[in-house]
Length: 535
Image (cartoon, rainbow, N blue to C red; front, side):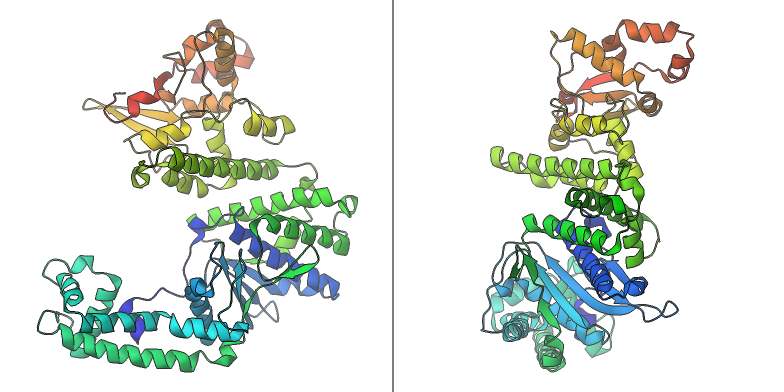
């Protein structure tokens, strides 16, 4: 009854917008899936792989489901909380442990509930179960609210602050606690419009305290040793030794080892069996697949579970040997997010006064995180229009990742400093600029490298690369300007020089499509978008 009043978090929620294959949590989920697959091979039960399912970010961070037959709906077998944090005291994980305990109690089919951590946890008592019991009995949500209610009852000044929330016209800005108290009071009064004021607040608090006291006792009765015995801190074998945690630097090694073992068990791709280096390539391929699945699930109903048989089929894909586009896209995504993180760390260190709440870097990264593989490829095409190469070539990979100052661009600086807001419905990062009453222009934020006026020949070659990139030119046709930093030009045509004129005058089939899409796109310096600037 209590949690109907306090607005407790739904057991089932979709947090796919914050989950991505390259993260610690996603890799732990994949590791558990691979361990199950390999164990079934080892036990000569590979036909049962089809009975297991991986569910990501629904009931829990991830869960394993099992179905006895293909005709029966899968049931929860194990649930998993993943915490990538530096805290080493068990109290810091009380919310996660309470969540696991409640879900084990409510779902009898769950055999195990695992807590995965990046740091070794110090136990309060000698045994794990006693430490968990002490932690969740003393630090659960019902106990926390019970203690807070006692403080409001006993402290008049704190009670006055609470009462401020119930004044007329402020009901829409209630805290979660105040909203729960008000809902409880109205239920007790059987009056949906009942109000809490100076004359009723103590009555409401006292009755709420009694309800919470019952909830605390019920919690202890429900979460008994039978439930607690199902909760475990997941252990890992690293360098031949058993560990109660998995450091971030070890997760890839563990995953690559499971993939290596899989090829030994299955002989799915005979030419790579026993090749440890190939396991690293296969891992990137799998992470790209999962990352794409999560991005698609966030925007469409494609089902919340993945059969482990489908995960196994990824490892049978022969295109991994040729390193297809998914392999390169995963590398590029991984590198892009790492650069964004480095940029934020550097900004906080060098500019402590920077207002992160107004910075668009986190918002842009969240937008880009939702891109599917195809959308991310499109984003790269426009962010780096000067790179006219296929993603599935080794040269393109090196050029995108390690080109000379390839990422030294206005990209992050623009997002940090501008007061303009990018368009949410545009795939690349774009800004709609209004001139006067009717004229509107679409400006593209790209990652073009900087030039000085003395680098005339290099600049012309650079602009020529953009114009020759017909795939980019087709899309750039919709734009009026490209945002740049140190780029000594006002239009793209001026940089291309004679090459631009040659295309305009040519009847060559090679340039015919370019002629249709050619448009003299403006180059606008980043300073024009900063506060007080003009465009």
